Image 1 (cartoon, each protein chain N blue to C red):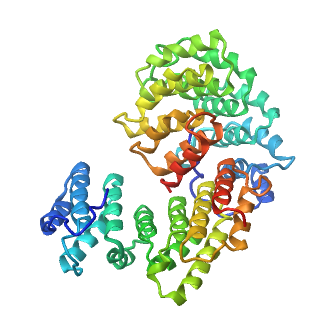
Image 2 (cartoon, chains in turn yellow, green):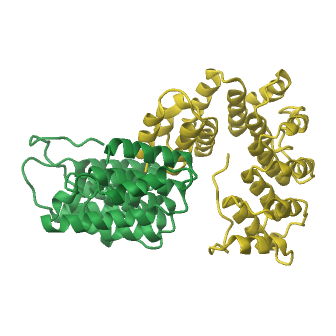
Length: 272
Length: 236
């Protein structure tokens, strides 16, 4: 789960019609990029929104390092927006994007398919992960990235929630991955799929990991699952209150369980 | 941090070496430690009533400066220390405000919100309405609910209370869920304010009602908090 960040620059308020106009044109990709982001952020319900985003998702473009824009920037943002809009018509194009050679686009597509709870994505997601930590989870040469965007693929499987033995078997080896962020993602997915408290307890231990980045990821993971027994540990984590509030919102909305909702709300009040 | 209570506190330590330790800190961790030590010393009142000394004022200004160093651990300690200083910290906070460092501004708004002094009202109002950082608007909304009206002249309590309500009503339209959440919390504490109108005026309850309605508020956690506020404020 990523905190939402607006695209850099170009951030004046616009209308829905203007966002659609920007996405529809193709002269200026930075305008398309912003339009796609806006439509997702504002949960646009306009009938043209989903078809236009699907069209943008099919659009490929070379990396333009000078412009400071990521590879396939418009397509990636379209995928993210489609994840927020919860419209099943996007599933087909997102499944295609999951097979793209650009791993950044595969990552965005996987997250969106997870947001949509798309059961059709379970088999292709498992296929990408099946070679395990030593192949799919091995570092790329000269890059901090892994061969596959494992974190996003694993989290998507957890969000979709198909808990068959085959899915669990694909995720389990990643519980031992070298990188704590991958372990955190695998633990979160196991918690979502099995509901066993030991996985929640394991995520809670990551809240005191020496690296801030790992603590932040564990906060987001506990929030995504809504694991209420983590309430006290989340409040006490050494990290930004903004992230703790997002995590506690997840506890309230994804709950249920103990402590009760009022206790979680009052813990949120203390962080404002 | 807990404040030692009662007249028999230990004598106040000499502040200048503690200030020097903050100024001379050369690592993130040593800055945190030095800030904590200074904040604790400031929060420990000497026995008997004391006037604000130049040394204390200097120490307070040092804590205000720490909030601009992009060191969250040190900033948390500084905010705790400033809140413990209460009204004495208000002028230094207002004067030390850095408009170009929004991390620092967020901490200053938090400290002012916690102190609850009426002199912070303009800043809290302005911050909730126009600050670019959601964490600043969030802290401001909470602070607008907890101004200490008893420190004001009786005739200015009602107008100040109404200004807080107006600012929170405008803040209830914020784009960020977490700011609207903080507005709910601010409205509830404003409704409980011991020197505010009783029972809570319908304008305040109406605003909470809107934030509790699915048709008007999309985010479940905000609605749940608004309903809790309405329950705790009792039947109109």
